Image (cartoon, rainbow, N blue to C red; front, top):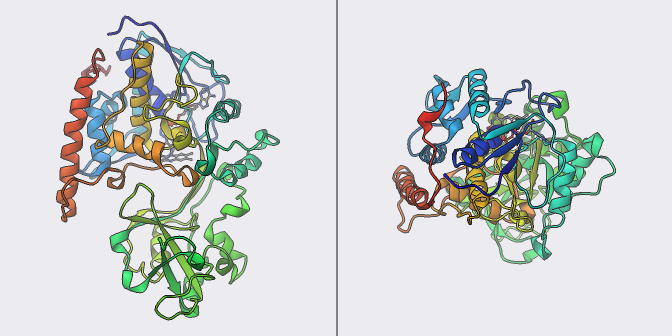
Length: 481
Ligand SMILES: Cc1cc2nc3c(=O)[nH]c(=O)nc-3n(C[C@H](O)[C@H](O)[C@H](O)COP(=O)(O)OP(=O)(O)OC[C@H]3O[C@@H](n4cnc5c(N)ncnc54)[C@H](O)[C@@H]3O)c2cc1C
């Protein structure tokens, strides 16, 4: 335990904040944990409990040598409170780790309440004090007042030259958050995810596509899937007939014109897509010299070797429908989807611009971010970044220097992605093998490759943990029943 010199303030007792508070306290660091519920609630939470799971009750695959398993295994090594409670409250779900959500949240709340070094403050935090070590873990539905405070902090951070994020992605949300009307567009802050589908590159039929840059400007980095009129018509009809995800009223978004779902564009007329994301001009087929009737462009993911996203194909369709309709695109007949398109409410920062590898703000190093708001996606990833922010905040409180986890680990890869991705096109990510670095030697067999990546990651993570001097790892057995 430290002979502590400072306390830590954690805002939000959701998945990330609860884990962060526990990690700090278990290292002997006093914590003020702010949670606004039930005084003020979010549109999705239904209880006053900490770590409420607002939708599904699944913490993803627990199958050995999968990427979500690897992250959970590292979290187990690091003594995650929430993972321990998840296992204790699990319900049968095949290879997945699913929990009894009521029991899970109750036990997290209970464990946090019993921790003597944590002071719970049931109030909305609206200000970040300079100099006070603070971890912001207020999630996808961060309150408006704090959002404005984060905007203030993030607008004093660098958004250099061509590295700056595209402001058009931040603006639309202001119009759909009535309380925020009239507020200037916060360029390092986003309010909804507009996610294009991603396919594995070795599932693309390269015989049916071609590489080209529009008007041959720049290098031919895009994969182009050409369509004839018949193929376009069949795709268009299937798209219009596809089923959308059902939304709750509060989830309904006033889409920004520059970021419409493809099915919405399609509803505006049979040819609208051909003047938008499927525009063929400047993309002559190199074999025929002719311009196709329509083109779908695929762009390589920055840090995701071996994967391509469908440019401008954000959509709100059910996943099974997306698979069916998108496989009508020439070259994607057998596409394997790493991620489907989505559009949903989500407050998150432009982490590549704002954060260091230890989740500290570049310009305000005593302010850290964790959970969904730092640019990860999903329950497990949120808990994981909460754990890491807690470890780093505790190190800061003790007057130490936070040390990031190694790149080869799941923790290190997830954080590497959010801090090193292209800031212009930054989108939140789940943990996948795509984010992990390639092995030094090529292994063709996918299963064997993943097994080796996990083995290496766990070895490196154990070394990193053992090197965190003076920082005891909280034993999972200490969780109260
Ligand atoms: C509608 C919806 C459905 C989702 N479904 C899933 C799903 O099925 N599976 C999945 O993996 N992920 C899902 N997510 C993403 C999910 O929200 C995250 O995975 C996870 O909850 C994020 O954890 P977190 O700790 O970052 O945020 P949260 O768990 O949301 O915790 C944030 C906490 O901060 C509090 N707070 C906010 N502002 C303040 C303030 N100013 N002061 C004090 N407290 C504050 C909130 O009350 C909340 O308790 C969904 C998100 C949404 C919006």
